[in-house]
Image (cartoon, rainbow, N blue to C red):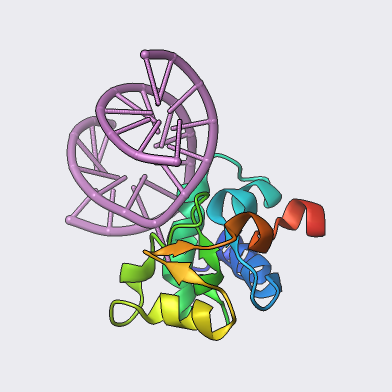
Length: 108
DNA sequence: TGAATGACTTCGG
DNA sequence: CCCGAAGCCATTC
């Protein structure tokens, strides 16, 4: 598994997500030129367990829904992590998602 | 080789 | 905005 280039890039972008902000899988995928492979971004996040510095909890789907919360420990760790950063989460959905959304394409 | 899977997205209704 | 269906692509079995 030395082919971690894609995962590494995903992790890099995820690390660049500012505190208290969130982004989407598609945005990361597009930024990496892998638009259409948003699922692979999610897969990369699954591998992000290798790098604990990767704030996977800041990555949600395009609706701001915490689709991957079940991949975290417990049942609400992801939500707690976000709330601890000041991100309001209700019903597994990020509030003010449009304002908290961080687009690597525009911000970088 | 091929079928199934998934932390997604887009489109039509 | 919600819902169903289709597309996408790396990974796994």
